[in-house]
Structures are given as structure tokens and as C-alpha cells.
Image (cartoon, rainbow, N blue to C red; front, side, top):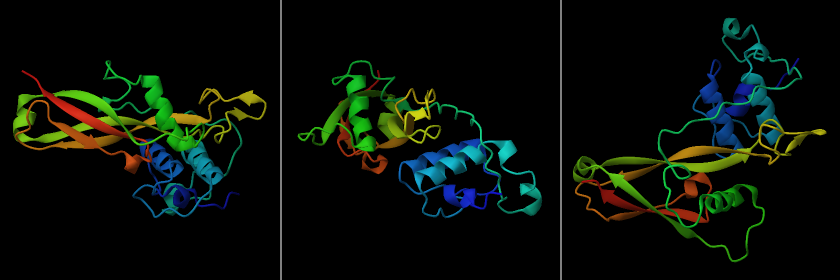
Length: 222
């Protein structure tokens, strides 16, 4: 019988849904605080992976959970876990919604990925700007508002624990890379009476990205 408190490891409340579990695992795997349900305890990547794989499978969460009103002692049953479904961002995506870009999308993703793996980092790499141009409505420019951007982030694959393989078999979930790509929202607060061509610097330190920031130029649609 498994004695670890998987809810406490992920920092979620009993009965948390699949979306909350994915969000909590992603946050903890990226080294940030867990979900709002319970204060997470320090945990290894192995503990995080085990907690996510068990709690994301209803049959493995334990049939007595609701009756007890407390975290169940969950059996750690071996076997493949369902692959987490991809999150579809509603925000403007850095990799899908901006076609004219220098550097290329692949170069941007490689640069972001280095923040999470620490691999192949050039000695000369410094903080640089990624120029983006966004069209906004005259109403938003006049009265102000929020523009949401979906920024790519990476975390270790929960299927293979970041190894890229499971024993002798290649990990299909992450394409043998050991990393999973997701997105995090970044909000640009547009002040009232914004003019066409105004630009804003958007830092990404809060996402763990230290070698890139966004230089956003606004174009007021006519």
C-alpha cells in the first residue's frame, strides 16, 4: 500500500480535476510553487512523476477517497499512464501567430529550451529582445486593456522522467527528447491612449527564461 501523500506532493486538494493536476505538475516540474489546494512539500522529480501518474488515473486514485474526505492511500499500480492532453492556448502564440520573424521559430524555441535544460548554452549568450508586432483595436488603444501572449515553456516528460526512453523503448510521449513543451500566459497591460507604434518591453524571468525578453510593438488597426 502506497503511503506517500500524492496530494501534498503536488500541492492540490483531494478531488482536483485533470486540468488542475496538469497545471500543478507542470508548475512543480518547472520549479515553481504548486497549486492552490495545499502547500506542497519538497519533492523529487520521481515523486512528482509518481504523484501525477497516479492521481491522473481515476482507477488508481482509490475508491475510498470521497468517503474518507481526506487523501486516500493510493496503490502505485504499474503500467502505462495516459498521456496528458495538450493544452490549447487562447492567447496569441509566439510560435503560431507571428509569421514574419527574425530569428526563426526554431531558433526561438532552442533558445527558450536552453533555459530549462542548461545544455548547449553558448558562452557568449546574453539577454536579447524578440521583436513582435501586434495589431490592436482602436477601442483597446483608446481605453486600455490586456493582451495575452502564450509563451513556450518546457518541463521534464512525466512518462520517461526526462530520460527520453523507458528502459529499452523510446518514449513516444516526448519524441525521445525527455522534455515536454507547453505554454504559459504572459499579460501585457496596454495603457489608455496608446498610440500606433508604441512599444513595450515584456520580461520573461517569471517563467524561468533569462536569455530572452519580448519587445512588443503595437499597431492600431484602422
